Every structure is written in C-alpha cells, then in structure tokens.
Image (cartoon, rainbow, N blue to C red; front, side, top):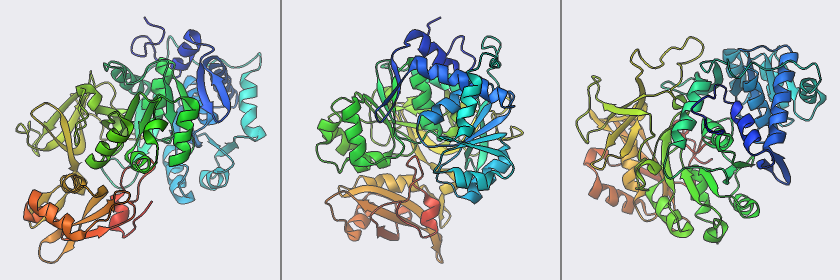
Amino acid sequence: MSALDPVRGVRNLADLVRLSAMARPQAVALVVADRRLTWLELDRAVEAFASGLLRHGLVAGDRLALVLGNGVPFVVSYFGALRAGIAVVPTNVSYTERELADLMSQSGPRLVVADRTTAATARAAAGDVEVVVVGDASYDAIGQAGSRSDAIAPPNPATFDPESLAVLLFTAGTSGRPKGAMLTHRALLANIGQLRRLDPPVMVRDDVVLVVLPLFHVYALNAALGMAAAVGAACVLVDRFEPTASLEIIVRDGVTNVPGAPPMYVAWSRQPQLRESLASVRTLVSGAAPLAPGVLALITELAGQPVWEGYGMTEAAPVVATTLSSGRATPGSVGRPLPGLEVRIVDDDGDAATDGDPGEIELRGPNLFSGYWPSGVDGPGPEGWWRTGDIAYVDAAGDLHLVDRRRDLVLVSGFNVYPYEVETVISAHPDVAEVAVIGVPDEASGSAVKAFVVPLPGHEISVESIAEHCRTKLARFKCPTEIEVVPSLPHSSTGKVMRARLRDGLTGD
C-alpha cells in the first residue's frame, strides 16, 4: 500500500495527516500569512487535540461544533476531533444567533469551539453547551492536556470503523429548512479516492493550494483540505476572499492550485495583470455553482489556461462530476462523473430518460452520505441509488449538462421553464457577467420569468438587447417578461446565487 493512498487501508480521515507526516515530515502543510506549519507539526497538534478532547470528557460518537474561520485552529480542531472518533459539525461563521441555535439544537454538540469574532454569538446560541474560545486558556488547555504523559490515546486506527459519522453538514437538501447530511469517514475518503483517480491528477504533492473558500463548506473541507492531506500538498489558508489581496497571496506564496467558485472568477476578471498574477498556477477549478460561459471565456483568455468546472453536493462528499474527467473545458458542461461513481438520468417515473432529454440525476457510489440526521431518512435506497433533485441531460459526447433544481422550476401556462436554461442563453450575451432567473406571479400565465442581469466590467447592458437575444434563442413562453439590470447578485458563502433572496426582493451580496 502506498503511504499516501487514502483508498486502501485508511479507515479514519485524520490518518491522512499522520501518513503525510510520516512521508513528508518537514514539508509545509499549512500557510497562514507569515506562519508555516509542517506536516509533522500539524500531526502532533492534531494528536494532542484528539487526546485533549477525550480527557475533557468527550467520547467517540459525540459531536464537536466549530464556529471558526479558515485558520490553523479549524484544521487542528477538525482533524483532532476525527482522530478521537468525534463527529464534527462545521457551522457558517456568518450565521445569526437564531440560525446557529437551530443547528445546535438539531445536532446536539457536547462542545463548541469558537474564536473571538464568533464567541458571543456561539455562546448565545449554545445555551448550556460549553464553548471554548481560540486564544483563551479554555482552548489552549485542551491541547495541553493531550500533550501530557498520561494522555488518553485516540481509537486504534487499525480497528476504527470507517462507517462512523465524521461530519454533520447542514444543507437545504431537497427542502427549505437546513438538514444535517451525515457523512462517514468512508464517504469522505471515497470521494478523495475518486478524485485521485483522475488523470491528469487534480492535485499533486508539490502543489500549493489556495484555500479561500470557507472550510465550513464541504467543497473546501474535503475537495481542498482533505485532498491536500491525502497527497501531502500545502494549503494557504485565507479567511476571506478579496480580489486584489488574494492575487497578491497567490504571487507571494507561489500558489499552484485554486479550488474556486464563480464569484471569485467574476471578481478576478476585473483585475489588471491577471495573467501575471496567476503565472504560478497550474490548475484552476470552479465549483459550487455554474460559471457563466462569458466569464469562462474571459478568464481563459486572460489567464491563458482553462477553468475546469465541476458539479457536486454535500450529500456526495462532494464531487460528482468534473470537466477534468473528460479533458474538455466545455462551456455549460460539468464533464463526466468521477471514476467509481455511477450516474443515471431518470424521468418522473424513475425510468431511464431518453437520450438527450433532461431528467433527474440519480447517484450510486461509496462517497454518498448515510441520510439526514439523526435517523438516516431520505438517504440512498435499498439498491444504493439516491435521487438528487437536480435536472440534467447528457450530450452526444457523453458530458453532463445541468438544467436546474427541480424546486426552482417555473411553470408558465402549464409549460416547464428551467431557470438555468434561460440563464445559459442570457450568459452567452457579450455584455453579461452573471445572471439569475426566477419565477414571479403572473395573472395570465400563473407564473412568468424574470431575469436579473449583471454587466461585464466596462460594459453597458440594454434591456431590449437582452430581450431580443432571448427571443432568437428561446421559445416565447421561456423568454423573460421582466429584465432587471443589477450591479451584483446575492451569493452564498461558496458562490451559489441565492434565488430565495431574489424572490424576496433582495439583490447584491
């Protein structure tokens, strides 16, 4: 078995840190501003934190909530909890007390780790649950207790059950209220293994990876941090994305690998000397939301290399497909499924959709979640298939194209209109940087299509030109009856357009 092979032999995700420390002890694991942490130093900190949690009274199967931004404490707390057999509940640091309290009440953590910027909200939301704060004695004491000569040893890696819950990530799922997707060590390791089977590889041991996407989201957590631990790459942790500063960090630290999201590339497309700033980068990836074809073309031209798009979801740990699988950065396509993951397109009756027709994506593979917390409801069926709620079709080349979420469907006079189809058409307009489409009430047709359009930098958009563009590309019932030009769109922490906010009349980030 290879020392860094996460598919065979590894049963606990945190053991990837130990294997990287054994293979590359003095190689840099984490970079935060001027601080450098080697894989050996990180592994020792993880071991101490794991032992400290057990001495603190937590036991395998308990849950640890993290209200932390991107930084060393997040990484140490995350891998330390996993090594101790404790499940981690990463939470969005921008959540209000009410939102955080709902997640706390659902997940039932035994301990909460916060930092000084989130401590007040975490304490108010946690109720009677203990909160330790990074930078205070309460947090330091955990690692110190784990470093004592009589420290409690974490579970034996050789007998650890990979079906143990590793991460409880709250997602909207197929309904409005957040639900906890249960991801086991098996699922997270499986997705890393699937990514590592891509050729050419998506990440290699000498990569320097920009981790500016939030670690509380599964994309950064597993496809970036988890992958880096598996191959022994270095992670440059950045707590907040800022276009100019992030490019300066790329140059300063020699970043070679960028897991990104569409808003990052939209913002970078406005930066002068983009090509020079990305000179060290070998791999640009975009996920979490579709990248507008115009932005893809612009970044490809300015950076001198393609942006590889992917499709995933929390319940798949997270990556499902990528254009790296097909080797073609085709606008509008998310490529092909990862090796070892089955994908099929079905109609409303669950039968295979006709070739080229849109249908719902079903998945089957070892990277799938175990259902929603706490009972495992709505997980994969008896034969292992799970219906995603996403609509897509497969083109003649075998590449997957997303159409939309089933719940975002707009019904116009009884006809189905998929917002993504309209967005794809409008995105092809030469003046458009980004677009979002929603359904709005209409007395005559029940619902009508409304488009929110963001212009490219230095471009002006004529509403009539967008309307005419749509009329030449879309059936009449699919054309927007309302077009609103806006300076920006509201996005989630990983770049998805928040259509619910647009429906509520809120625009802008």
